Length: 169
Image (cartoon, rainbow, N blue to C red; front, side, top):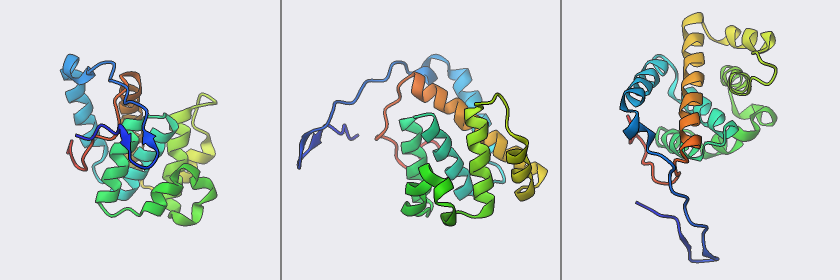
């Protein structure tokens, strides 16, 4: 396990903050239900699209643990570094993504942020053009699942850097 405390070129890194709570240990039935939701939500979705959605929602929610996890999983399954790096500015980097991926990313932002209290019709309609109803339901489920995981990760201060690709699969 790496602790990320020493940088030989510039000195010490900031210390890693300890987790606040091992929520899965104290709420094991909730954790098991979340795992079942996660397994069900990813069924039938393209793995690259799935990971892009997970990374983007986690970026918006500032969940460092989930960004670490899903970036490593995406890289391990062949996603390009360039597409992952551009993800935080996907709207300005549209040429790196397919129209279907762009629709999923737009929907991810609308569902994750809910600034206006709803998902705009044009965002939903655009996603509906690129996904059949069953696949669209799965994309919405994947977005919902990662947002729930992000809330646990951020609230409990789960530390990034220790995840190994595929560790929880």
